[in-house]
Image 1 (cartoon, rainbow, N blue to C red):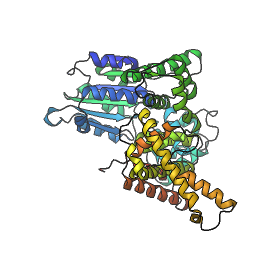
Image 2 (image 1 turned 90 degrees about the vertical axis):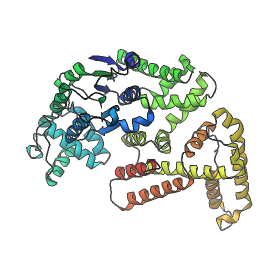
Image 3 (image 1 turned 180 degrees about the horizontal axis):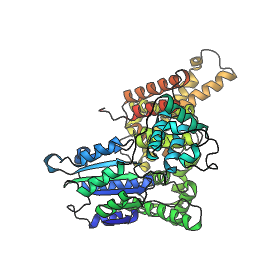
Image 4 (image 1 turned 180 degrees about the vertical axis):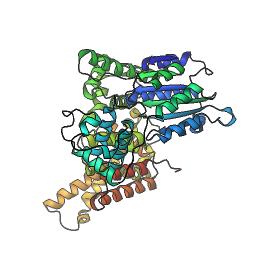
Length: 486
């Protein structure tokens, strides 16, 4: 039917009648962009958010058996003829011997994060797609069989470890030859009216028969962005961020000058997810003002560069599982230690507990849900300062809290405890406190206590159980972010 770029998606959706959506959509490229594009498509097909909960089913593509499940769901008529969307998310269906490097990168990333279960799953999937078994592999032929250049991975011990584990656990590969063929046949046979398929992926093979079938029967949205360092690549990356910024600013009736954009781009670089997060902060930071200035970007982006772990703790406090796992993986890739990350999340929840205590005090009446930042500065910050000063005065009057006379060590300890217990620390920007207040408001006090208990259990498990620390962190995060009704 058609093949368009992500920039043209809004226009395509405006021009498409509600009865003439394509039966299948392939959205590929930059993960943040294809996630946004999929949301636009889903919102266009099923505008009612309540109906989306029942009509939009997400299947994360991990093995070939899911394709059969997808086809069965697509061929099942929806209840009362309502619209139904099946999304095959983060699919590897286009991985083959011609582009297996994408899957190898995923295997290495999982292995480096000590996530051996995920690494093994990806590895077995790779072998299946290449139509080889663990028994076919030896020290001498592993690079040739997997199509890996020796200069890319000169040390293949990690691959040999996965191979030996697969043999030891009697893991068998599943042939994927018919996977794309099954889906292609289903698309050619036709999908029942009001049923829709969306495939999202970071990898496509435009030469494949499945790609050509989707192009013929559905719509393909290209969300790819060149990652090169040539001037033309940099210009494309810059324009992509500029387009995304203008779309977001238009939604909120705001504008940003070129100097402010240049500063944001300089601080963040080409990381659409981080850029978008910082832009959201700038929009919220400016309150009723319609223009975002250089000083606003400086204020909200300062912590992004100084403290990248802030993005993870913020995502956890938002109860956003996908963003939390994404930022966790990014931090681990950057060399952060598991206990360092755990400590940062724990500190955020401890501060959230302090906020709940403040809200129960007379000073806490100044806060109200949905308050703008400018109102927060004028009304809540003075109340916080009064609260913090009263707390510090309390410590000054009660040296016995430290059980003995305040020698140099105890004075230092007292100062640390006092600093840990105040809400607005020295040199801390009020906006950071405003954001934490907003996120703490999502949780009930007992939920914060339960989160701290889960984090304490994770700390003990990391130090004593011998379990993979990445898996322990992921489990704790999922437990904290899980919706209240689950």
